[in-house]
Amino acid sequence: MSALRHSARLSPFQPETVWTLEGAELVERRGPREQRFPLSALTSFRLAKPREGGRRRVLTLGFGGRRKLILTAQSYVGPGRFDDRLASFSLFARAVAAVASDLAPRARFEIVGVMAPREGLTWVMGFLAFGVVVMLLFAFSPGMLAISIEIAARMAFVLILLAAALPWLGRSQGLDPHALPEDLLPGG
Image (cartoon, rainbow, N blue to C red; front, side, top):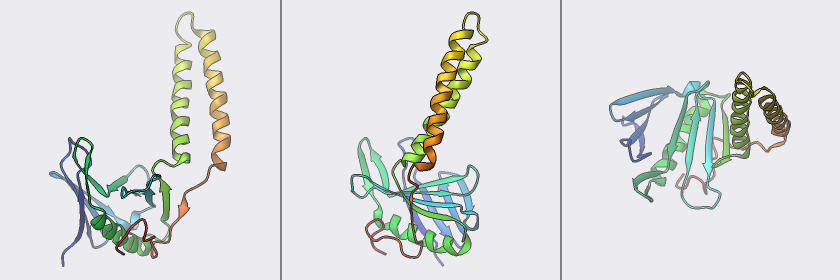
């Protein structure tokens, strides 16, 4: 039995990455390195659709905690040049969704933008929180107490406002793993 596979070169300084679906495991091979991800541990299946159209697709698979796997439909060839591999990507994404929906019934299947607003805001909040900590550390420097506390307080206020807006940002669109959209993953 041959394993289903998809491959792409993600960046100029990395060898081609090959993903294979071997039974209930997703295997990622990049050069001599190999990682195995059991699909029963899948927590999120996020298919990114391009805002401007085109054939670019990105699939992000979360496996709890910080373990994440990113698959792309285009392979890097050279500066500004990409090889379109949407056919094998679509087939592979559909197979992963079908197997994972049975093995990980609690996993979230969703369609997101290339950079969802919620995710972007979370990054901004993280950087802002880091800035607050740095400003508070500057308060220990001679002559910096008043200005550091004032700037940190303002940054913390903005952080609180952003945190209050977070629940109202739209979540991603739900996705049925057994009926993936033909316009996003053609050839199913």
